[in-house]
Image (cartoon, rainbow, N blue to C red):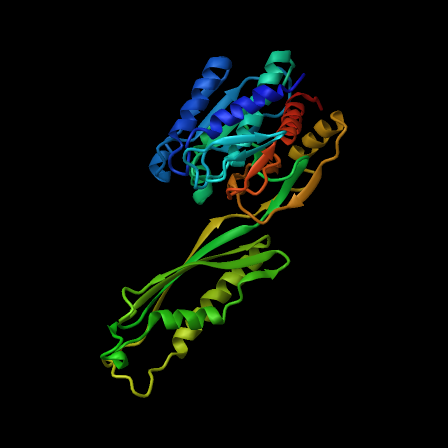
Length: 384
């Protein structure tokens, strides 16, 4: 079968022109429902009720394709949303590479993956090549906490294992990704006029600074990271701030280390608050002292795929048929694949060649998209 590069480019650029920042995926969902109904009448499109949970204007889509080869059902996953700035994207092409005009992202993350799936299915259908039955899973709100995957109605899925097309690299499988915890803490102090009565105040922002000075951020070890991403507090420069909120995350490929580092952050912050004592000239209301409210939330579980897993062996057979070698790596980010794995659906991540994602320098090469479409088609058509 032949991958039609211009057809692939056309559907990719058409989708990039559809605004679909997280929570506003309705245009993309409608585009795909229309395309699959028009071109693949044998496919059955299902829609869940996830918008109530995600806050999106669209639901997740699951599309069932019948097959003509015996074998285990598999699924392919992409997300419909993009990060901002993503409105009014203008796609430019220089040779084989696509860029945006420079004011927005491109949208290859993850519309490159969707375009690859569409072209692989078109090529298989056009060549009338026997293939496995499979499901397509298109989720919303991936870029804002994997909300769509978390809210997905799993009863709509026939397949119990599959692949997410959502990574850099080509001929690459991501078989490991970290788990993540989100934390936020609020320190409550005491407000006072900064010029008239500073002795009556407890500066919550200053206390937060002391906490952060004792926390190690960045790379904690070879498989763990931590970050403070947002600090909000204060109302005016002449008022001692009585409240500050600090938000951050911890990631690790090790569940044990994730728990350890998360606990260390909480204990360190609590120790700073416990050590606080008023200044000698303080004029505080009796009994007033800083308070801490610390909240920790599990964002997503780790992804760890055994090298002997059937989803990897299937890719190896496809790569052998294409006379290629597949590389295996661990990634530092989370994706829908983490959620699916955590729900008992082994999911590996296929690299599609996206580059400089989440930036206005984002690009993708049509040659990498073609190679990945060939791999997807081979996964579906190469027999055991």
